[in-house]
Image 1: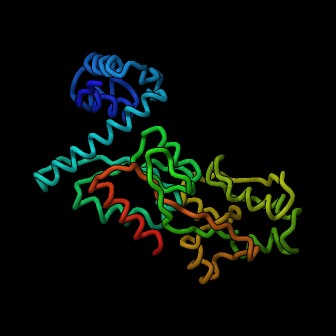
Image 2 (image 1 turned 90 degrees about the vertical axis):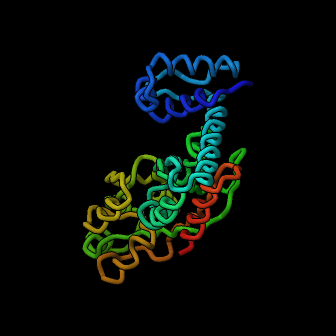
Image 3 (image 1 turned 135 degrees about the vertical axis):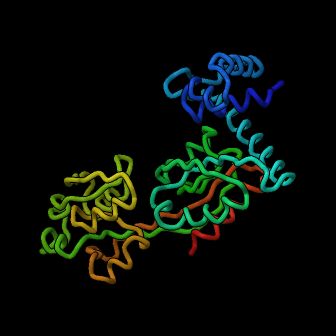
Length: 291
């Protein structure tokens, strides 16, 4: 296959921007030129690479070529940085990280890497149980995940655990659990969920009672605001230690069902690629997670 760098960069831009028109603006060429590059790339590969939807997505074959395109771009930028130092162009690195990690420990780690390696990050916020799908699609280069089995073409390493405990305000506990935590009280007490893919609260309920209990629930789709909602007494929720330990010491939160914690193991998965930039990001995240 004869794959031209301009065609590969067009593929990356179309997927990242979502449309041919937005990719054209990004690349400072016409939409027709983007279309021509993509047709030439598909002709060179001999397969359809894109689904012309809005946003544009890759086919299964397209995901393979997208990964190659991102790898070529990353290696090119690593070489440029080694040769030109601070004069090198800034590189975009797409990563998938779960919301609680972003809110508690991951961002300081990324900040420690960005200046030296001339990186900007395109972070996809996704539940830790689903971040590996973005690796399979070629969308991201690395992911914080709860999946211990490496995605094909990737390496995996354990980086730590996050402990979640059922927490609520003292007033909430007195109102809803004054007579103890039971199937009946849990079926009526409002709870907070991150989104409709969040399984932490329902998992606790299923273990604590018979499966099928569906209490009233608030959906709060950011990690910081989720913790704030619990702290404001909207409902109970499974909170990580980093968002609840100090509040518990201050008497603002109560672990209303001690011993019913959920421990989520976390892993770092990344492409098997000899890249100084990707290695620096991996080292920073692996070092930050245990702390």
